[in-house]
Length: 111
Image 1 (tube, rainbow, N blue to C red):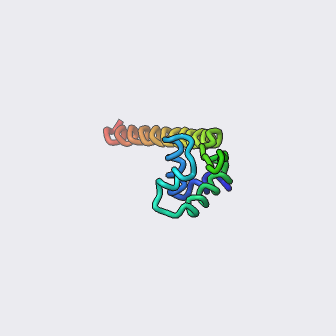
Image 2: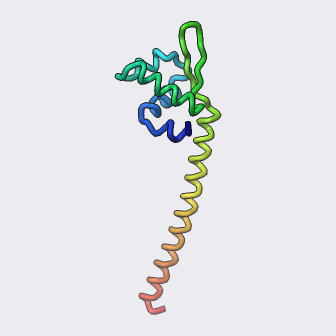
Image 3: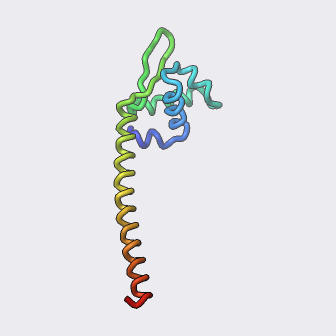
């Protein structure tokens, strides 16, 4: 699954936030953070695993989840790139507006 599709669900974004804040957690600790069934949370965790945003380790009977920081960083790099591109475009638009305003003021003064 695509990482952005995986992050489309608010509950999955919340799971990512929990893991980012608290680090590695057993599945039961993640389940305890929500008012939904453990099986529903398990499905969300599966989507996050399939998107390679989290990984799971078996520790005895427990499943311990952690963020896959490489894929999280890829998202960060992508968002920074898009932000840079938009800032560049908005900067160019701002410059055009400034030039246009100066031209209007110049015409108004009859220069």
